[in-house]
Image (cartoon, rainbow, N blue to C red; front, side, top):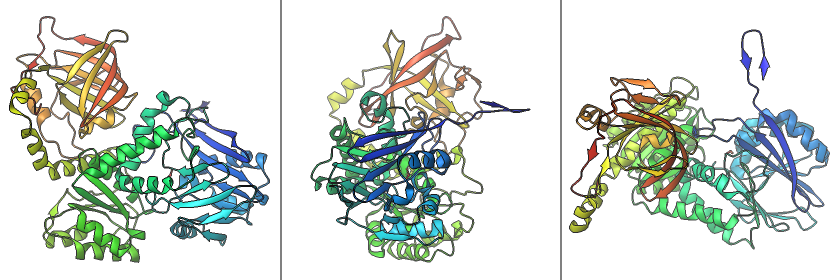
Length: 574
Ligand code: FEO
């Protein structure tokens, strides 16, 4: 911590770890202990890391670099390991700045290097670094022999999570370098994944945020991985390297992605990579959609093949488009293809990218409306650098769209229970509660009934939260919230208010009396009692998360008040 005259500045902790992970293979891990937000993953609790790898055969390759904030630390570590002018290749898994932020600086000290990447990645890199360099475009099946047994093979892994992503497999060490895929935002001194219990919540959360909207691409990459002779280690770009749980953790990606792609209804999300905030806003919308039973496929307008656009539009129930730059010829051409393939029964949603030269959003949406498409959500205006509240609005707009697209299916499912079973299940009773949460400038609330005390030591409670609830984003492991317990005979106004349909991003507490709890979340003044809780773990239960939370403190407002009870006649809905 550094004290200045009028304020205290907390220095973020940045450290470097180097470790040999296989013969002639060293990782340089940039440990960003305090990073508390990463694109849309506003739940980030445990910092992150940016992992780079040095492979020394007769030739030497560096796989990815680091984030620009690590410039001094990273180059100090690298030059401690090797003279950069003796490195032959720089493999870039993709061009996102958290891994490629030091490429230009690296090429300045190692101009002899040949940059190896997907064709699209090299095109992106040309625009990023504006300087000549040696390059080698690779795709699935391309190989590069470093000598000394280190035969590298490349695998296309588009959309994991940028369109230009490649994986690199070293036949000599059976290490697969995957960068974002199979990673997690988790910072610790552990180089490897030996403590599965410590990392699995972050692994899942990262998948839900970054990979679930690309579930089909995940399955494609897993299929290509099956053709490899065997994979002992997955050298990820974020978090601990996978070595102890490779089968288990890749298996989870497969299971989750198969579930996501089984959905019958699909939404296409088109964005413009590396333009304004297009990709991050697209991810937030896609994340919201995947909370429902609707699948998402994301496509980069900059690298979209007309045939693939046609095919995707043909399969989609809704089309979401982020405004590209007006002078981006390929993206504008892709939008013309979308327009000619669009069908009247589809919905259209447009969001702005805030790139400085956006194609105007309303005229773009109107072209689709004129064709007979229905509005998926109101145009998402972006008039300033996006805040967490705007990402939340995007997330909620996506969830609302997913729910609207599946409303018939949901009603059908509700009616499908056997009548006797339905009535019997309906005899399970619960209380009536409102969960409230605030995190930074984000807040949310949810009416709940499936709540039960779950343990004495520690004091704990379990709550079932439907996966498509907005508050779910604020109930990640480590998050704090308040469980408000409603009073019999004095809850109808609260129930009416919180059962209302809120517009994306709308303040849930307007007109409601609240006071802040010690943990910062709102206590409803009219509730009978409240408990302050912290999420300890989450269990996947089909369409719900079972959220187990410890209880820190609590209070009753009326000694003789009785808890409101929720009696149901049938068990096929709340
Ligand atoms: Fe970790 Fe896609 O950058």
